[in-house]
Length: 182
Ligand SMILES: CC(C)(COP(=O)(O)OP(=O)(O)OC[C@H]1O[C@@H](n2cnc3c(N)ncnc32)[C@H](O)[C@@H]1OP(=O)(O)O)[C@@H](O)C(=O)NCCC(=O)NCCS
Image (cartoon, rainbow, N blue to C red; front, side, top):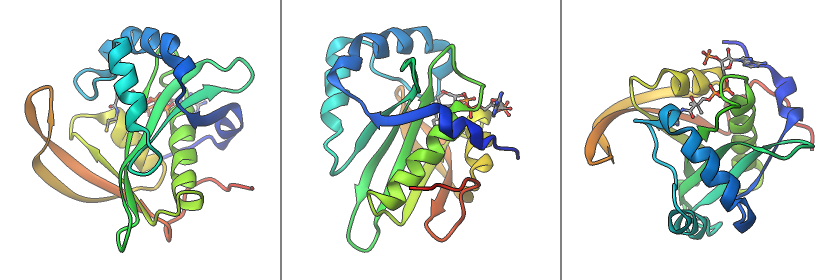
Protein backbone atom coordinates (compact mmCIF):
# COMPACT_ATOMS: atom_id res chain seq x y z
CA UNK A 1 0.00 0.00 0.00
CA UNK A 2 1.27 3.46 -0.82
CA UNK A 3 2.19 6.09 1.71
CA UNK A 4 2.98 9.71 0.92
CA UNK A 5 5.76 10.77 3.34
CA UNK A 6 5.42 14.43 2.22
CA UNK A 7 2.30 14.63 4.34
CA UNK A 8 4.56 14.30 7.42
CA UNK A 9 6.02 17.75 6.76
CA UNK A 10 2.55 19.30 6.51
CA UNK A 11 1.29 18.36 9.97
CA UNK A 12 2.22 18.74 13.63
CA UNK A 13 1.24 16.33 16.40
CA UNK A 14 0.92 17.95 19.83
CA UNK A 15 -0.81 17.29 23.17
CA UNK A 16 -4.47 18.33 23.24
CA UNK A 17 -4.93 21.59 25.20
CA UNK A 18 -7.72 23.45 27.01
CA UNK A 19 -7.80 26.01 24.18
CA UNK A 20 -8.71 23.29 21.65
CA UNK A 21 -12.14 22.81 23.21
CA UNK A 22 -14.29 24.93 20.92
CA UNK A 23 -12.84 23.75 17.60
CA UNK A 24 -12.50 20.12 18.77
CA UNK A 25 -16.17 19.96 19.75
CA UNK A 26 -17.25 21.67 16.54
CA UNK A 27 -15.26 19.25 14.35
CA UNK A 28 -16.30 16.22 16.41
CA UNK A 29 -19.96 17.16 15.82
CA UNK A 30 -19.35 17.75 12.10
CA UNK A 31 -17.64 14.34 11.84
CA UNK A 32 -20.30 12.30 13.66
CA UNK A 33 -21.25 10.27 10.57
CA UNK A 34 -17.60 9.52 9.76
CA UNK A 35 -16.95 8.30 13.30
CA UNK A 36 -20.09 6.22 13.79
CA UNK A 37 -20.07 3.34 14.75
CA UNK A 38 -16.31 3.14 15.26
CA UNK A 39 -15.55 5.83 17.86
CA UNK A 40 -17.50 8.29 19.99
CA UNK A 41 -15.54 11.47 20.70
CA UNK A 42 -16.33 14.12 23.30
CA UNK A 43 -19.35 16.14 22.19
CA UNK A 44 -19.85 18.46 25.17
CA UNK A 45 -17.62 20.73 27.30
CA UNK A 46 -17.80 18.26 30.21
CA UNK A 47 -16.91 15.38 27.85
CA UNK A 48 -13.96 17.42 26.61
CA UNK A 49 -12.67 18.09 30.15
CA UNK A 50 -12.98 14.38 30.98
CA UNK A 51 -10.98 13.66 27.80
CA UNK A 52 -8.31 16.22 28.79
CA UNK A 53 -7.99 14.77 32.26
CA UNK A 54 -7.34 11.28 30.85
CA UNK A 55 -4.21 12.65 29.21
CA UNK A 56 -1.97 12.35 32.29
CA UNK A 57 1.18 11.52 30.27
CA UNK A 58 1.64 8.41 32.43
CA UNK A 59 -1.22 6.13 31.45
CA UNK A 60 -2.27 8.04 28.36
CA UNK A 61 -1.16 10.79 26.00
CA UNK A 62 -3.95 12.45 24.03
CA UNK A 63 -2.88 14.46 21.01
CA UNK A 64 -4.30 16.49 18.17
CA UNK A 65 -2.96 16.49 14.65
CA UNK A 66 -2.79 20.02 13.22
CA UNK A 67 -2.07 21.54 9.85
CA UNK A 68 1.24 23.41 9.87
CA UNK A 69 0.80 27.14 9.45
CA UNK A 70 -2.96 27.46 9.60
CA UNK A 71 -3.11 25.20 12.67
CA UNK A 72 -6.56 23.71 12.18
CA UNK A 73 -7.27 20.31 13.73
CA UNK A 74 -7.05 17.45 11.22
CA UNK A 75 -7.73 14.70 13.72
CA UNK A 76 -7.00 13.26 17.13
CA UNK A 77 -4.61 10.47 18.12
CA UNK A 78 -4.28 8.89 21.57
CA UNK A 79 -1.75 6.50 22.99
CA UNK A 80 -3.55 5.03 25.97
CA UNK A 81 -3.44 2.04 28.31
CA UNK A 82 0.31 2.50 28.62
CA UNK A 83 1.87 -0.40 30.49
CA UNK A 84 5.45 -0.21 31.71
CA UNK A 85 7.64 -2.94 33.23
CA UNK A 86 8.30 -5.84 30.89
CA UNK A 87 5.52 -4.82 28.46
CA UNK A 88 6.41 -1.21 27.52
CA UNK A 89 3.33 -0.91 25.36
CA UNK A 90 0.45 1.40 24.52
CA UNK A 91 -2.81 1.24 22.57
CA UNK A 92 -3.62 3.65 19.75
CA UNK A 93 -6.91 5.43 19.26
CA UNK A 94 -7.43 7.81 16.33
CA UNK A 95 -10.02 9.67 14.33
CA UNK A 96 -9.95 12.13 11.44
CA UNK A 97 -12.01 15.31 11.37
CA UNK A 98 -13.98 16.39 8.34
CA UNK A 99 -13.12 18.07 6.03
CA UNK A 100 -9.59 16.64 6.26
CA UNK A 101 -10.34 12.89 6.00
CA UNK A 102 -9.14 10.83 3.05
CA UNK A 103 -6.14 13.01 2.16
CA UNK A 104 -3.27 11.14 3.77
CA UNK A 105 -2.95 13.35 6.86
CA UNK A 106 -3.99 10.70 9.36
CA UNK A 107 -1.52 8.13 8.05
CA UNK A 108 1.19 10.75 8.52
CA UNK A 109 -0.14 11.57 12.01
CA UNK A 110 -0.27 7.95 13.15
CA UNK A 111 3.28 7.46 11.81
CA UNK A 112 4.34 10.47 13.93
CA UNK A 113 2.52 9.03 16.96
CA UNK A 114 4.25 5.67 16.60
CA UNK A 115 7.61 7.43 16.24
CA UNK A 116 6.80 9.45 19.39
CA UNK A 117 5.84 6.26 21.23
CA UNK A 118 9.12 4.54 20.38
CA UNK A 119 11.53 7.46 20.60
CA UNK A 120 10.11 9.67 23.36
CA UNK A 121 7.80 7.48 25.44
CA UNK A 122 10.29 4.62 25.05
CA UNK A 123 7.60 2.06 24.35
CA UNK A 124 8.48 -1.16 22.58
CA UNK A 125 5.05 -1.88 21.17
CA UNK A 126 2.03 0.04 19.90
CA UNK A 127 -1.26 -1.78 19.41
CA UNK A 128 -4.40 -0.94 17.44
CA UNK A 129 -7.66 -2.83 17.97
CA UNK A 130 -9.91 -2.46 14.93
CA UNK A 131 -13.38 -3.78 14.09
CA UNK A 132 -13.36 -6.05 11.01
CA UNK A 133 -15.71 -3.76 9.07
CA UNK A 134 -13.62 -0.64 9.63
CA UNK A 135 -11.93 -0.58 6.22
CA UNK A 136 -10.37 2.91 6.46
CA UNK A 137 -8.63 2.06 9.76
CA UNK A 138 -7.48 -1.33 8.55
CA UNK A 139 -6.01 0.26 5.41
CA UNK A 140 -4.30 2.92 7.53
CA UNK A 141 -2.47 0.48 9.83
CA UNK A 142 -1.52 -1.77 6.91
CA UNK A 143 -0.14 1.26 5.06
CA UNK A 144 2.15 1.90 8.06
CA UNK A 145 3.37 -1.69 8.29
CA UNK A 146 1.46 -2.89 11.36
CA UNK A 147 1.16 -6.68 11.68
CA UNK A 148 -2.18 -8.45 12.23
CA UNK A 149 -1.67 -10.50 15.36
CA UNK A 150 -5.08 -11.93 16.00
CA UNK A 151 -8.82 -11.65 16.36
CA UNK A 152 -10.73 -11.25 19.61
CA UNK A 153 -14.50 -11.84 19.58
CA UNK A 154 -16.50 -9.37 21.70
CA UNK A 155 -13.30 -7.61 22.69
CA UNK A 156 -14.43 -4.01 23.39
CA UNK A 157 -17.81 -2.61 24.45
CA UNK A 158 -18.75 0.25 22.13
CA UNK A 159 -22.09 2.02 22.46
CA UNK A 160 -23.33 -0.77 24.71
CA UNK A 161 -22.35 -3.69 22.46
CA UNK A 162 -19.35 -6.03 22.84
CA UNK A 163 -17.66 -5.76 19.43
CA UNK A 164 -15.25 -8.16 17.71
CA UNK A 165 -11.82 -6.65 16.98
CA UNK A 166 -8.78 -7.49 14.91
CA UNK A 167 -5.57 -7.01 16.91
CA UNK A 168 -2.86 -5.13 15.04
CA UNK A 169 0.53 -4.02 16.40
CA UNK A 170 3.90 -2.57 15.48
CA UNK A 171 7.07 -3.07 17.51
CA UNK A 172 10.35 -1.14 17.60
CA UNK A 173 12.15 -3.76 15.57
CA UNK A 174 9.72 -3.30 12.68
CA UNK A 175 10.22 -0.52 10.17
CA UNK A 176 7.81 2.35 9.60
CA UNK A 177 7.65 3.28 5.89
CA UNK A 178 9.01 6.72 6.76
CA UNK A 179 12.46 7.95 7.74
CA UNK A 180 12.44 10.39 10.66
CA UNK A 181 15.30 12.81 11.22
CA UNK A 182 15.51 14.38 14.64
C1 LIG B 1 -9.69 5.72 10.16
C2 LIG B 1 -9.55 7.17 9.77
C3 LIG B 1 -8.84 7.93 10.89
C4 LIG B 1 -8.71 7.24 8.51
O1 LIG B 1 -8.61 8.59 8.14
P1 LIG B 1 -8.21 9.02 6.67
O2 LIG B 1 -8.33 10.48 6.64
O3 LIG B 1 -8.93 8.21 5.67
O4 LIG B 1 -6.68 8.58 6.61
P2 LIG B 1 -5.58 9.25 5.74
O5 LIG B 1 -5.50 10.70 6.04
O6 LIG B 1 -4.35 8.50 5.95
O7 LIG B 1 -6.10 9.12 4.27
C5 LIG B 1 -5.91 7.91 3.58
C6 LIG B 1 -6.81 7.92 2.37
O8 LIG B 1 -6.63 9.14 1.66
C7 LIG B 1 -6.30 8.86 0.29
N1 LIG B 1 -5.43 9.97 -0.13
C8 LIG B 1 -5.87 11.00 -0.87
N2 LIG B 1 -4.85 11.85 -1.07
C9 LIG B 1 -3.77 11.34 -0.43
C10 LIG B 1 -2.42 11.77 -0.29
N3 LIG B 1 -1.98 12.90 -0.82
N4 LIG B 1 -1.57 10.99 0.42
C11 LIG B 1 -2.00 9.85 0.97
N5 LIG B 1 -3.28 9.39 0.86
C12 LIG B 1 -4.14 10.14 0.16
C13 LIG B 1 -5.67 7.50 0.34
O9 LIG B 1 -5.76 6.85 -0.89
C14 LIG B 1 -6.47 6.82 1.41
O10 LIG B 1 -7.70 6.33 0.91
P3 LIG B 1 -8.17 4.83 1.22
O11 LIG B 1 -8.17 4.62 2.70
O12 LIG B 1 -9.53 4.76 0.62
O13 LIG B 1 -7.17 3.93 0.57
C15 LIG B 1 -10.95 7.82 9.48
O14 LIG B 1 -11.61 7.07 8.48
C16 LIG B 1 -11.84 7.90 10.69
O15 LIG B 1 -11.77 8.87 11.45
N6 LIG B 1 -12.65 6.85 10.92
C17 LIG B 1 -13.55 6.83 12.07
C18 LIG B 1 -12.81 6.66 13.37
C19 LIG B 1 -12.09 5.32 13.45
O16 LIG B 1 -12.49 4.35 12.84
N7 LIG B 1 -11.00 5.30 14.26
C20 LIG B 1 -10.20 4.11 14.46
C21 LIG B 1 -10.81 3.20 15.44
S1 LIG B 1 -9.80 1.77 15.62
